[in-house]
Image (cartoon, rainbow, N blue to C red; front, side):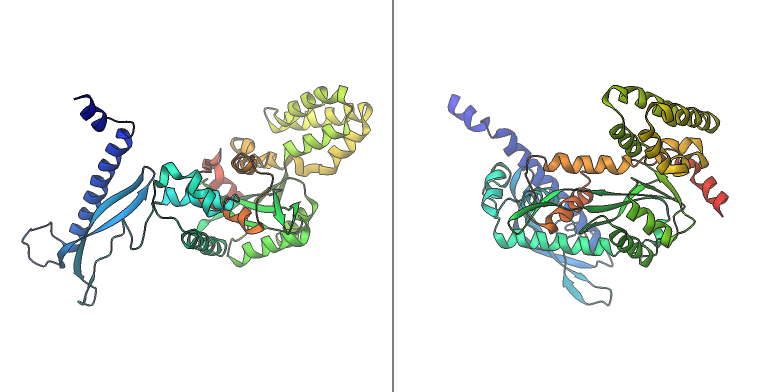
Length: 394
């Protein structure tokens, strides 16, 4: 009796029962899909059928709980021109051997530098003997590369991009036998409805006016239109590229980046006082209070630390561009924090690695995280007032 209990309720019983339920669920879903395609359930007699079943075939699909054997139905259906063709499932496409979640896990490990043998070892509890060859991994990477290429060239006209945030991120990667730091140029757009999306992502030799000029030229080619606002970290090359393409665009210098610059100019004993004065100015309740605090800040730090004032005045009015927009949007417009959160998530995913294996792996890994939904973007605060801004600009 005890032996029978151990066989029925052993250490693997949870996964076994879950795989059984997953198989039942997938088979039910596929059969429901086929019923819709045929216009009739199994053995149902109806007029105007669109085809007939003819048996089943065995398929193995690796899910997040390991390989699961399925019984896939077969059928002949009528095409649009009245010809007969073999039915193909959209739920479990032809030649699919793994679910999207498993493929994303394999891609993530490969792009982080693991070879096929190490992937098999790391995902052994997941694959449970399921097939995984070098060719299968190469096909996954090739498919991701193709998807990234199509994504990078997609038309932006229908996105209705109103605001942009642009910044560079510097991961470590291996080129030849050396580890180097190169910039990844990321552009985030805000749509008319307030939704945030990444619209461009590319590797560059350096964060220069020429590199950012290529990014902006690509956006123009893809019919982005003219955004009314751009938030940047203060990179002079990016600033020059934006003004060259769109002379009338409103540019906001990131207030967080400027604070870090000011702190680097001040003695350590004055930094806490500097932060308090700066934040009191930037986060004042209304535009009049901000401008009043700005004048007080300039008077005080001209005497306390002239180097701080010089750095502060370098940004000029572009540090306060957000004041020209509705107060509900100030929190979203003052900084490049929306991009910093994405870059922070990517750093978290790769922090155990000294460097990434290649330049392609950097953009593909980040694109894979975005596509899989691992990196989520919140809607912009104050989105309800975007229409008001667009009417004012018009």
